[in-house]
Length: 292
Image 1: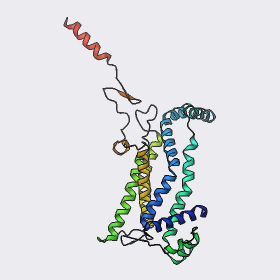
Image 2: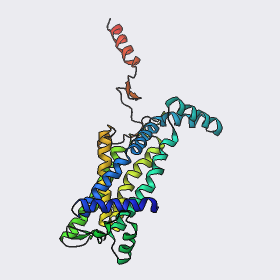
Image 3: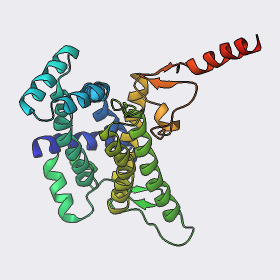
């Protein structure tokens, strides 16, 4: 991990010196730089997620058709993937590559803030560029708050309490917004009258669990990490918008209950199919015969 962590700590310290020894600005710029460097992986992950979502109805049909023959099911799935040019590993690889980078980024912020004398000594040993030790210790104050400490959420209208509540709220809100905008709309399962596919329930649960989990992290860890979460989420949202993959329908649409048919027609694959009304036309003609 040090092979990634030490360069990250050094770059963060360089930015701290360039940006007027402002630790918050250094975290913001550093997070944006890392996000930009990982943009190809993020784009590939979003593309793979959307493709997988579109294939769900066909995969569901195959699972029902070959539920007693796993070997045949696997063959048909791979055939479907080749037909659409989809690689199932393409969505996992970006996550595998990004995970150690995100962990190193988190650790870099923790080490750069250096809350104790032991951490200060450790920080000086991680700086790879000569002369950076002149900035140690780094200024870790922001709006009167210590960036190395968790937000203070308590009674009273102090600045610490207001800023702490605002940071945690922003972490939760931006995490929820990024999840909603970057998650494709759930495809309906085959023959389920518009009912979302089985994986859609898990996706909806993650949309609730993830913001709460990140909010808990914001309460438990340093304020510097909260700033990282907020900036990273906003950068992810902007990337999705610029790529044209921001799913704004997820923000306003509500899942429709299955099994609701209307007299106007049945919705199949996004098109309204009229229901034939032979009885109505028949009754009209019979009425004319009677009148005659």
